[in-house]
Length: 447
Image 1 (cartoon, one colour):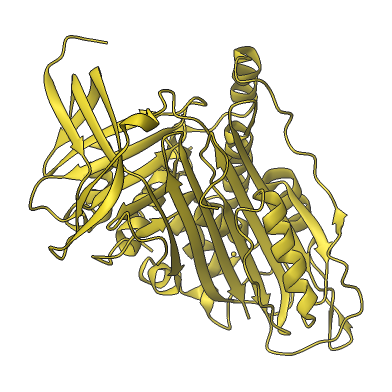
Image 2 (image 1 turned 45 degrees about the horizontal axis):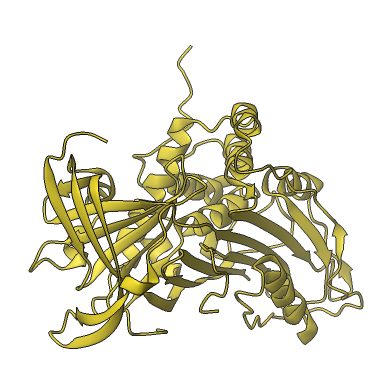
């Protein structure tokens, strides 16, 4: 019997106040919009179905960590699919020269996966092709395993992914039925609580924003505008912080010049550190090195060669992959000079998803019959993010809204003098790319 191909990677179709810190927040809103309006009475915002998050364990409890990993196997092919998704979406998003840009591919991946779990027909096929997995049941199960593997909550750091369903069960006096299987698997694989609300009332947006703020320790409190046409919103948040293994000495931080891509200059506070023997990578047009975090995460920094724009390195999926994975690995002295920065990004992702073959989900003929038998289709996909780094660590946050109507001998030296536009990423221990971006101006607080 011919083996079924499950993972398909080729088919086209604040500033932070936590003194130790990576904080990453990802909020994802799906809103299924209909072409009619409705009235509703119930709107408390309280959960009608709660979920129990995975049990926390200490940083030094390696036995429990091993048990969690063994009980929740994440296929290498799935990690590859997630990162292929990250690379191809990043190449289509990180394109604005001269502007700081931060993007959370894992946020969008979880969002689109939850949408795919309720899709059928061409809508399902296109979403699965984007996600690189050809079976939505396998996709949901692998997302659940990845969730439990990534989950951290200890004395040093935290990575909490939270999801919720916000359902309006009435439209023009008629009942709206949501499929039990969708709600069940959302709870089992995505840890999604369920809430009964009225999208015609302004307080619904406030309840949803409060839920986001609560699940991100108050780091983001977005203004959410609901639409009377909505019947469902799905929120996903990820809160993440950690410490550098070797924190920077604040006494060595000094103000220096950062050279912008337009030829002008700004002043920024640069953190300084030198490692006598560390790993770095030399690639075509760039040098790449990483700083380790105590829970096994890394922040990757990619410094383009003099005269090379960051965007020359990330124009295509293949180039993004080469920039993050390729090059020659070398051990040697690494001199770090990193500007402290804090900025926000706001992204509209409809056109990017269309360009990658997701079209059916945006049409009136979209098939989300695994969620509801009512007509439903995606109208908007929006992501907002925030990132900041200092001597103790890095804080990152993202909010995505999807509306429907989802030590060896030294061999060289690397001068990671990040005094010109550079690329960065935050990765989990299993290689999952959580955030990726370009720092064009560390002195700019917001986009």
